[in-house]
Length: 342
Image: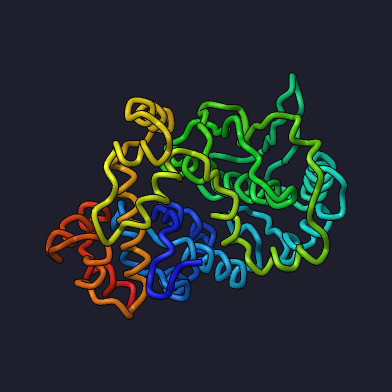
């Protein structure tokens, strides 16, 4: 738990994710600006391609869309997913012995409800694949619905066994929309484009893991979902996450150098750089992303002035913070806050 007055500094969500969540509401002629404001998201952020929102804002928007559209896939497909189906699916899967049994039952249940794509679990040569087929990917709404279902299914998978199940890869058909997603960051796995299906792969041996949930824990899970799906089962052993955790403790001051971080992680600078390259990250990039995410979370709260936020992020001059934030999001921090409060 964060100390009072601090930001959680969770990873933030790209505005493109928000735009795609809104496809169904837009197609049905709803006032999307009003829906965004209900979720605490400024409509003006939609016009800033580099802007981002907090995970709490994204989770709230999902709840708002579910309520207004009476659809647990938020109007993205021609056929709605009935309210309550997510909760019932969790209850059905929790009442099984192993992950393999749970996924088989859960996907069989969803095949009865879904009319726009077909989810199946395939096992071959020691690899288990969740594959969604039969969908119409020519329209952005159904294509995004498939990716959203994959994300939710991965959340169930990890929750059922009480741990992160490492993915070998995420499979997407090749599209500009798919490439605009934060998939690799969210699911912490490489994305393979040009696939005949949407889905993800993992070692089949994980299917033997015991299900550790029960009907009582389902209720707690549902109270926290979908926000809990975004952060609960991140791989904290990745070098990127470990460095980010170290930096988080030094946001207001001087962050540790590469050599200092290497010593704390018991790695030489050369090994640290190599590990970061493998995770498609840079030392400086981690620090800048953390500051950006913390700034966005601080700006979502009205108790801090802009100079106070700048100081909490380690900027001696507010003007330096202003320039950095505009480079991150294409909006000055004052504009960002004003648009959120309209």
